[in-house]
Length: 263
Ligand SMILES: Nc1nc2c(ncn2[C@@H]2O[C@H](COP(=O)(O)OP(=O)(O)OP(=O)(O)O)[C@@H](O)[C@H]2O)c(=O)[nH]1
Ligand SMILES: [Mg+2]
Image 1 (spheres, rainbow, N blue to C red):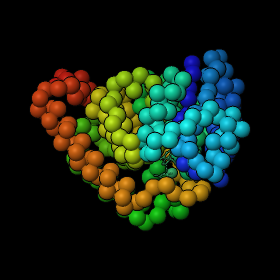
Image 2 (cartoon, rainbow, N blue to C red):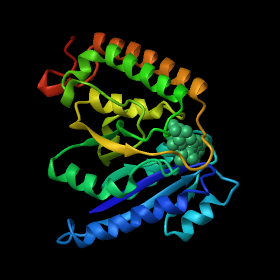
Image 3 (cartoon, rainbow, N blue to C red):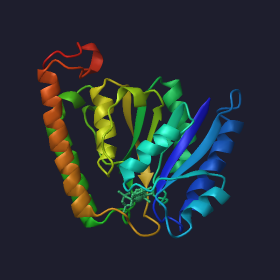
Image 4 (cartoon, protein in one colour):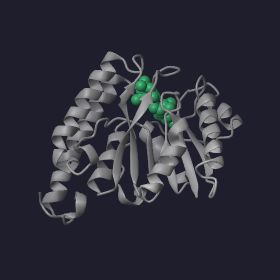
């Protein structure tokens, strides 16, 4: 069994060593305990956007495999990383030390033991007071509310009947998920696109509560610009899904209802 942690980075020199080290320590511990009988071959794949602050060299020195993706965008970096990752299971995290990468091995075990396809972390569960600015909180609330209303009929079959955190960037999924979802986004909208696709394509999907901390280093996200383009993407995606359904095209509906059947 192989598993990859894919980390996109753009000038994350203050935090990347911490992220890689924390993950590698927990992976070694997991191989000595929960994966003792069948150790996992772990890799950290850093997809660096040609950072100018030495991020790539730091990550490499910590034992990560580093690829440089010069084309801009969070989604672009992930799509390149997914294609190059060697894992049968792929996990993701920002490089800014906000996400609990030390829990990835345990979540990989959970995914395998419970026969799940896709796990996503819910940051709203244990949100550090300083982890999000007010604009960021408002943006997340607006996007989550839009998803809850617009995709309500598809969310019904998701455990809890709701997506609590449509914008989380902490996922653990089986590699074959990539053959079943259609990813198009190069920007921040990839995060919501991947989750919505996983839900639409009838994958075994679960949201798990995670701790989310304050960012180290400067943010790369613009709350208003990225928030608005994420909202526009969601509206267009909902429209496309409606067209796909009308044409009887392959939207796979949850819990065994017939693919292509109108709802
Ligand atoms: N390779 C690459 N990585 C990027 C790019 N834009 C952002 N990233 C990385 O993607 C991750 C997510 O970006 P963040 O700035 O943390 O976005 P966010 O988590 O939504 O916002 P914060 O709450 O401010 O952290 C970080 O590790 C960034 O360094 C890019 O264009 N290319
Ligand atoms: Mg971040």
